[in-house]
Length: 496
Image (tube, rainbow, N blue to C red; front, side, top):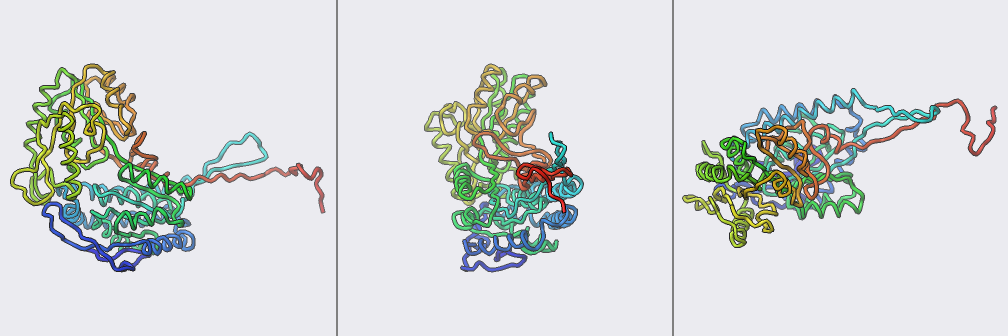
C-alpha cells in the first residue's frame, strides 16, 4: 500500500509529512496510514499539471497518441484486477464479486475513451455554413486545460476512471483527489499510469481530507475545470466557489430515485430488480432506487416476497465466499443510516424487515438490509437520500398517481418502471423527470451511455461521448476569404 503522493510523475512524501488512518469497515482495524496532502502539495500538483498542459505538449499530442497511454493504463488495471479488487474490499467493504466487476469496468472505461480519443483525429473540425460567402468558418474542439477531480468513496477506482479517462482523452491534465475513506486504489492508479509511461504532470494524485486537499483544488486559480461526484451540499459549495473564477464545472450529486412497478409485472423479477436497485453496494449508490411504488393489485404479494428474500441475503466480510451484503463504509456512515431508520420509525414508518445490526457481528459497520413501509410522504426517509441498504415501499392506484409521486422530489438522477405493457412503460419513462431511466430493470450502467441528473442531482453528463465533452471547449475560427477590400473605414483600396 502506498505511503506517498503521485505528483509530476514521482512518488513524493507530503510536504508537511502527514498521514491518516485507513480502516477496514469489516473489522474496524486500522490497516494502513495513507499520505495526507495539504494545500502546498496541491499547489505543486497543479503547477505540474499546468506545465504538462501549457509547455510540455500533452494537448498537442494526437488523439491516437493519447489513446496509446489510455490503453496501456487499461491493460495495467486488468493485469492487477484481482489485487485491485481485494484492495477495494479492504477499503470500502463491498463484496469481492462487486469489486471485481467495478475494476473490470474501470479498465473498460479507459479503453472506451481511447477509442473516442482516436475519433478526435478523424473529425477534428466542423465546417459551418455562413450566410456571407466572403467568409468561411469552422468549429474545433480543444481541451479545457487543467482539471481538478474530486471523487467519492462508493466506487473508488471506477469513479477515478470516469474522470481521468475522458480528461486525458480530451487532452486535459488532471489533479485527482480521491475520498479520504477509500484512497488505496486511486494511488495504485498512479502506479499503473507510471508503468504506462504517462508523461510527468499529466496525472497527479493527492490524497487527504476533502476540507484540506479538496478545498485547495477547488480554490486553486490554476485549475480550469472542476469535476465532482458526491453530496448535494458539497456540490453546492463547489458551484459557489467555481463562480469566483468562472471555472467550468460538472457535478454528479445525490438522488432519491423512484421505482414504479405496475400490477402486470412479474413479481419474482420485480423483487429481484428492487433488491438489486437498493442493496447493491450496501445501498451506497447515488442512483439507488430507494423509493418503490407498487400498484395495489400486487402490493401485498410483492411485499411479502421482498421481505422473504431480503431476509435471506448473506451478510458478512466482502472477502468471504457467498457474501452479498458487506459492511457500510465507515462508522460515521453506519451511524447516519441507523439514525435515518430511527427517525423514520419516529415519523410513523413501519420497519417491515431489518433495521438492526445483524446478530453475530459485534465488529464491523454492518446493518441488516431494511424495508420501510407506511412512510409519510413528507418525512426525511421518503424525501432525503439515506445512502444505505434502506428501501421505502408504498402502494399506488393509477398511472397518474405513480408519476406524480415519482416526480415529487428535488432530485432527478434516476428512475425505473416495470411493466409488461411496453407502451405504458415507454409513456411513464418519458414522464419521469430524471436523467437516467430504466425499463424493467434498475441500475445497469454502461460506459457508452450518458450519466447524470435533473434538478438537484447535478450539472452535466459523464460517460459516453458526453463525458468527453465535459473536458472540451468549442472554438470558432472564421476567415475572410474574399479578394475584395472590406471597405468600412477605408473606402478605396490603395495599391502599391
